[in-house]
Length: 196
Image (cartoon, rainbow, N blue to C red; front, side, top):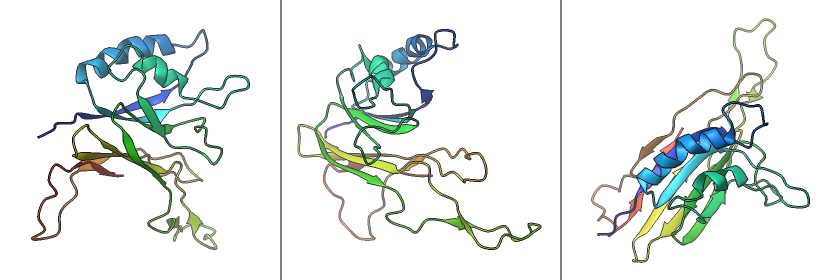
């Protein structure tokens, strides 16, 4: 049976920093890199990774690449949430890093359920209509395969945010999808799913 190591990290706004900022990106990398190396993840799911800009180039995940340099994920494929221009978001990207072949990628934002709305019932004056709560970033999923025919999937998500207030913090919960009663197991299938 093939084993695949999956790790998840909330990097809390990983970005390049001003020269006087503390902790600096270099200080954060020095602290976090040994943890990433120690886990030896085949698939790592990262949250809150900011994109960096360089003149004449699309925004990229340069701070994350600096963090992964010298680890087993150095040079790994980086699959991330993306705006329509196919670069990366300026803030809080969801990123999956892996050397395994990525066979499928999907970005979901109100694709499976309608956008949630909220209406205060006791407000003075009362709200005239429900307001959309909104989702700050889409859910990012990807499917990888090892060198054997056993596929693996990894999912990472971001919290919902409400426009009129600051974003709540919801930890991601990971679980194995349940099979229908009496359904045979899929040989070698390893999936991780998350829900906020």
